[in-house]
Amino acid sequence: MTTFDQFFFSVFTTFKARFKQKANAIALVYISALQIALLFLLGVFFATFLDKMNVSTISSDKAWILFFISAVIIHLKNWLKYNGKTRKVLNAKYNRSKSKQHNIILLLCLPIVCVVLALILLQSL
Image (cartoon, rainbow, N blue to C red; front, side):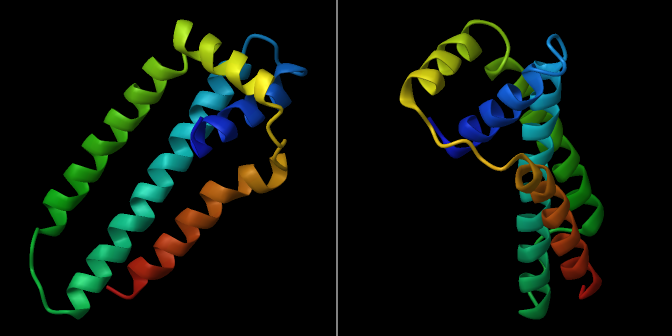
């Protein structure tokens, strides 16, 4: 199981007690937001780095279009992975492996921290 799978099931099991039918949707939105925030942070880092090195590779408009297409693909990939039979198999592996339960507050703050860091880096462009 990957780290993202463990994060997904930590959020899923936390919200399963409160929101029985919405827990999967909440965990899906969380993991997609986390991966998109990390993609945004990585993209802004490389854009800032290449700008400081005076390398022009791609225009800003094309970079934003590429980011939005990548975000949609990430969300669709997660939707396919964490719905249905694949999620049940991963859930069985997660429950059997006695994985360490992550702190839900830190997990929920992780995408916010990534976006804040990316915005700070974006200011230097």
